[in-house]
Amino acid sequence: MSESKTTSKCPVELFIEVMGSKWKILIIWNLKDRTLRFSDLQKKMHNVNSKTITTHLRELENLKIISRVVFPEVPPRVEYSLTDYGKDLFPVFDAMRIWGLHYLECEGIKAKAC
Image (cartoon, rainbow, N blue to C red; front, top):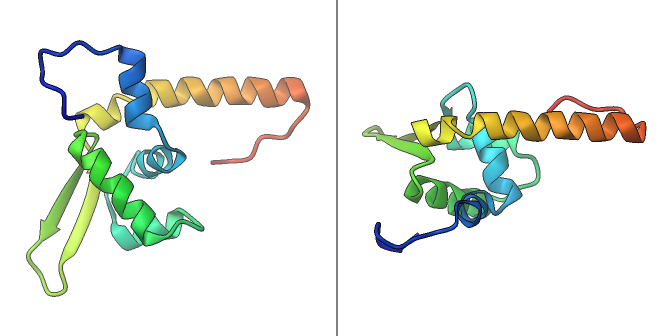
């Protein structure tokens, strides 16, 4: 988002810009209750290559949804966690989960843990 602070923006468009990819949503979901290193995050996101994860982590960091901390060690250790903006997304995620559960129940499909 390179627009100035005085530019107006539709809140729904902003949300879509922030959450515009399933990978971003999965990154945020996996950071819900914990700080993770890149390798741990990659293990939780099956079948996603490291370039894709890195790209989305950078975007989320630029949007101030996640925090990235680099520890001055050899080799460098990097940890990711949610910012307050990131944590504020969980009521939205809970609403999505409730909607999904209702839909699956109505369609006779068993819900699995996620």
